[in-house]
Image 1: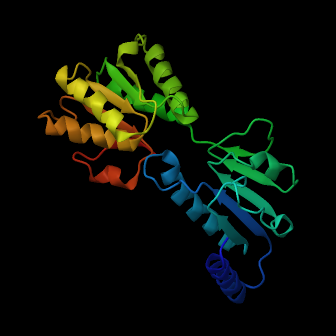
Image 2: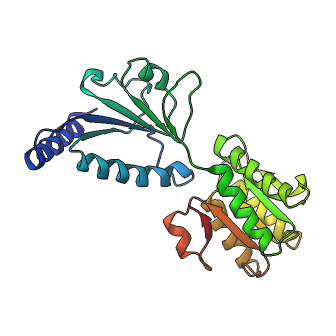
Image 3: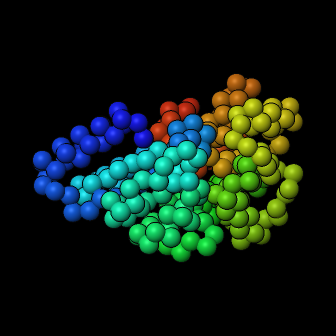
Amino acid sequence: MNKCIYDTLLFLATHEESVMGPPRITLGVFSSAQIGSGHMGETILLGDTLQGIHAIARQQNACVVLISEPPGAAGVPAPAWDQVDGWITIHVTDGVAELARTGVPLVLLNETVEGVRCPIVLPDNRGGAYAAVSHLIDHGHKRIAFTGPMNFVDVRERFDGYQAALADRGMPIDPDIVFDLHSNDDNEMRWVLQQWVAARLPYSAMFACNDNNAKLAITLVRDAGYQVPGHLAVIGFDDIEDAQYTRPPLTSIR
């Protein structure tokens, strides 16, 4: 951590102490330096989570130190472990096992680490996807496409919910309308959508694993002259702020 960041944190900690008295405990928060690219659900998760951490910390007169690197980042020296009373990690795995071995209380958000036993907070990926697909079925849709990179655990859990919703309604799983994007690259999603348009939208609805893919679908389908949701109903996942500004506003799982 460079001197500028250190001085900033020191100022903030001193300011908090002068207003509220000496902090009772200090919490350390690790998040990935890659968060903020706009392509992953953890981008949305980070903002809401930090607001929640800050709100509760102020209520309890606790000091919070945020480190925008995973605990095991190469070249980053271990923080002063003995100065922190508890750790929270947000969507990181690198170095978490070492962190757990210190014996300091640890909570993982949106990630699991094999061999690490501690409280974990996870989104209801399966339940959210189940609700989304059930909503589409209730509106009469029988061919519902799924898009998402299956190499992510979150997406696989959402796919489980997609399959469960169809199975519970006695609807077959059609592998031809399940698209494993392999990555969150917009170009791949754009290619899939172009195939849909060329085939004159053979699916009446789509459940996208994240809002960025859903937004892209709405834009490309509308540009091709189709109506949303008239010709293609779209539901996303994450409920990012931009979802309310699409035309029409995106239905999304928060």
